[in-house]
Structures are given as structure tokens and as C-alpha cells.
Length: 117
Image 1 (cartoon, helix red, strand yellow):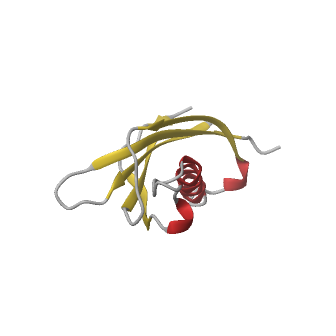
Image 2 (cartoon, rainbow, N blue to C red):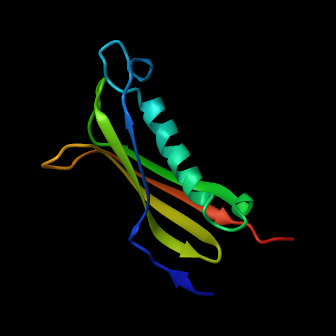
């Protein structure tokens, strides 16, 4: 069994925080951020053959900062590990700023690859 460790970007997407995604203090809701990250990871799985054979098995979700109304956020997925039995994504969410990278969240999503019966 070969294991590949890949660090190049697999997928990146962006969104702007809108009124429906924030609390009364205009801060992005953690549940909305989680949903965006999960959707991004699931979309990345669609690029692999037999993506229906993936089963979610682990998550690590660390909030490092806050995002607010009208912030532009970038979600980047990197493949940390790809093998015959699993795939693990490292995901970062940062504010889109020209001069610096302001990371607000780091997550790791792991999926088990089910063998075809």
C-alpha cells in the first residue's frame, strides 16, 4: 500500500460574510463557518473517482479569530494525506487582505475510503 503526502493546494474558494451569516454583534456565526468548511471539503472529494465510497471519520476545528459582516474570507484545502484507505484535508480560513494573511480558523477533516464490495 502506497501513501502519498501532498502539500499543494487542492481547492480554494472565497465568500463575503453577509447579514444572514452574522449574530447581533455582526460577528460570523461559528455554525456558518463550519458549514462553509464542510461544504468545501465535500466538494474537494468530488474530484476523486468513486467519491461515494468516502466515509467521514474525524474532524479537528480550531477557531483562532473572528470574522465580521462584509469580511472577505478565503477557504483553502490542502491534502495532508492520501492513501488507499484514507484522505485527510488541512483547511485554513483567512481574511482576504492584500499585505498579510489573517487566519481565523484551521480545520482537519478525515475520510475513510470504503473498499468496494
